[in-house]
Image (cartoon, rainbow, N blue to C red; front, side, top):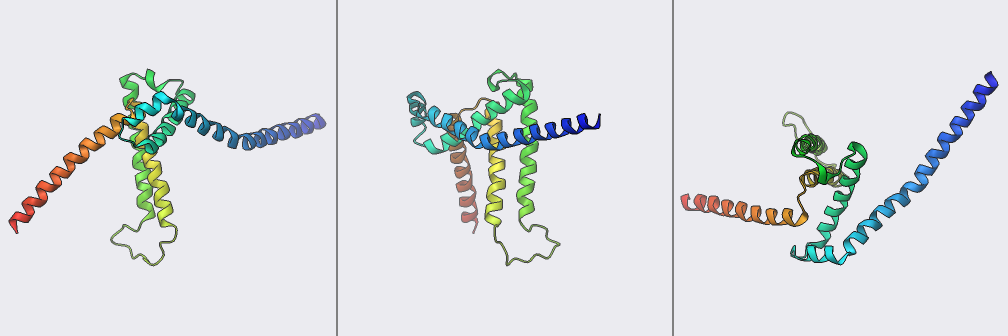
Length: 184
C-alpha cells in the first residue's frame, strides 16, 4: 500500500512539474500571439480608416485596443459574458468593482511618495521612485479604461469627450485666472 501511495505521489508530482514547465514555456508564446492578434487587428484597413478619423492618435488607440482585448477575454473567461452583452445592471456592478480597484491603485501611488505631514522623511533618495509611480499609474489607467470598455465607449468617443472637456477646463481656468488678475 505504501509503495502504491509513493508511486502515486511521485507521479502526481511529476505531472504538476510538467504542467508548470509547459505553462512557463508556452506563456511567452501565448503573449506573443495575443500581441500578434492586436497587430493584425490594427492592420485591418477598416480599423485604420476608423482611427485615422480620430486626428491621428493611432498609437494610443493601439493601447486602447490591447486593453479592450484583455477585458473581452477576462469577462468571457471569468464571468462567461461578452462585454457587448452586458445589461446596465451588470455594467453598474462591474463599474463599482473597477472603481474599487482604481481607489486601491491610487492608494498604492500615494504609498510610494512621502505624504504624511507629521512624519519626518529623508528626501535625498528617490532612486526608482519614477518607475514605481509609473507602474502604479499604469494600473490606474488600465482599470479606468476597463470602465470605458464595460460601457462600450470607443476610443473615438473617448478622444472626442477628452478634447471637449479639455476645452471646458481651459475656459474655466482662463475665466478664473482673468478674474484674479483684474482684482489685483
